[in-house]
Image (tube, rainbow, N blue to C red; front, side, top):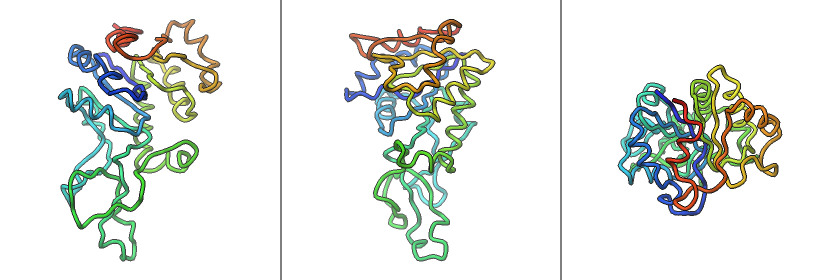
Length: 250
């Protein structure tokens, strides 16, 4: 069974149906393939697209035991592995909030039962603790938050997945995040001989790409494990079926 891993779906301002044109059909057609999306985007475009296309997918959340109005962010390897399509947001999401029961506000330990979660309905017993959702942004809080209980398991799963995968598709990512780059390089050096497909109008542009990745491009191309698709995703440029054929491991 082949596996496909993707870091960050093309972050354009187009309608999701343009950016993801043909993706749903490709997913349905590839019955024996598991699709694993690891995205660095905070928005909900991919979730909305998958829902609109009636594609079931796994998202690392679980019901909160105290209320049906919220779910907690919690990764499950069992459900991740069993799902045909999974979506993991490595840098958080605009619908992830730090939440706690209101009665804990005046308690001796006011943060004891706080959690990072997603709100589905109303429950007056709970409150959001911050004015902004829980996301990792640039140098603002990445270093401080990467190792927290929410993000560390997701990053660890990316590392594991890259080591076990045979193909990585990278869309809209300029290789500027040192932490993510280290995991990608580790995956490319793994015994599984990972192949990488990069979709970008200007792949590995020096203004965005870190030297640690630039330094290895020639080697990966010589080994025929790096494929570039120069252009944007769309009906008039590169389609998802074409992308999924690049570096295809049979």
